Amino acid sequence: MELADGVILFGGLLVAVIFHEVSHGVVALWFGDDTAQRARRLTLNPIRHIDPFGSIILPAMAVLAALPVFGYAKPVPVNASRLRNPRRDLVLVSIAGPTTNFLLTAIAAIGARWRHAADGADISGSLGSLQGDLLLKILFYFAFVNLMLGVFNLLPIPPLDGSALLERLLPEEWLPTWYRFRPYGVLVLIGLLFWTGVVSTILTPFFNGLVDFIGL
Image (tube, rainbow, N blue to C red):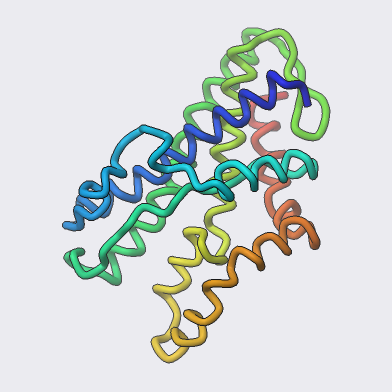
């Protein structure tokens, strides 16, 4: 991958994770919890959202391992006791991030499809090497990182959003076991990413679908 492509990918990922996290806080605020607002997390300032491992190290490792680029930011603080209906509202707060990423994917993918139809650029390689049109390349990579981030965060592994959804659905008697497992979620995630290829297998069809939709 060329340096310019890497810069666009990381730039797109940074924007994607910021919108992802802000959306969690905004939805929590809608339902009565202003914790994220008071923590100054309802901002587009990347410094307040970057997680050293999830936002920098993990995406870099994925690029070096020729895996789809994905990651996460520092979780936005949510106080369930301040929500009007905690069990229901926490589910909606959890899906707000991936939903935002899928919305951004749709916008960027439609833009890339239109641009490609007008421009006729081409793509080759595992992540793609777009030729000839910088705008098409930016739109494609932004759609790509948002799609990967949205799907990736739905995996039911802590600290991803899918784990929060799973936690809300688990029977109450299973929760103590879940709480003991939760601190080891990152280790499980790393193992799945770099030792089994399971995550890459899950994400690849979504990437191929994006390429087909744009017509690359």
